[in-house]
Length: 346
Image 1 (cartoon, one colour):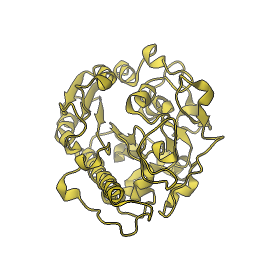
Image 2 (tube, rainbow, N blue to C red; image 1 turned 90 degrees about the horizontal axis):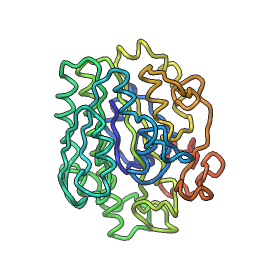
Image 3 (spheres, rainbow, N blue to C red; image 1 turned 60 degrees about the horizontal axis):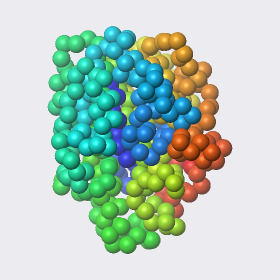
Image 4 (tube, rainbow, N blue to C red; image 1 turned 45 degrees about the vertical axis):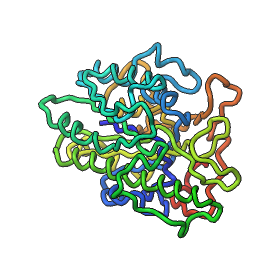
């Protein structure tokens, strides 16, 4: 199972050392997870990122998603029945590419018919369809669940009972009253996202199915994290670490673990610097799928993994592409504890 999140910056997850308790449910099952802490998205926009994540395209070869098999094609050729469950909008011109990817699956479940992102459509709607697919009689299945995650406007991303954070206590002093409100709304959205992702994992575990689940966000989000330029959202022309640092988690069933050596390598592999533009190699590696052109050095879980450039930026302007291995971010957020973030290339 692949769970794709939205606009979630790992620096705002308690699981990654953030001082606010934004991930209580994931923290409760932390021992069952591999928590990778140096994973980055190549671009700060959903469509452009997934064109690389779900295919062999990357920042240097951005059009390969049009010319070579995608992750959906790969799994179908390996004998899996494929499903796409989404709470992303599918009735907007901008999201046509998402629909194109989803149509490559054998079955699609579209749950969000809103035309505006300024509407409440909570990600909890994906849970029942997922559980139904999980428990059907198909033996080999590949399930993609695409969430709205923590996309702006943040107060539309969680129900009222998840309004956990409020006020300005312990928040950065540079925030205005309105910015305090939105800062809290983002953290509340992260906390609800924690609930949805952990519920999917718990449902998988309860089913006792043989398999694994990967969760990551398509890209990050800046929400008034830097006092020099108070900004909420993403801007590829003015990149900051918050726009690219993403959570990346792996859960494995007990039966899957018996055939995997990852648990014994956790202390080394979870700190590998990695771009999700290479994700198709990691997924194939986890699934035990080989093919001509498979590059083990681009799989974050493979013993042959080696460091590669972590390119960010617009591929149509190659001279401005930035390799975070050479030019790391230096705009660490001030005044907020980042915990494990000290390991990161930011």
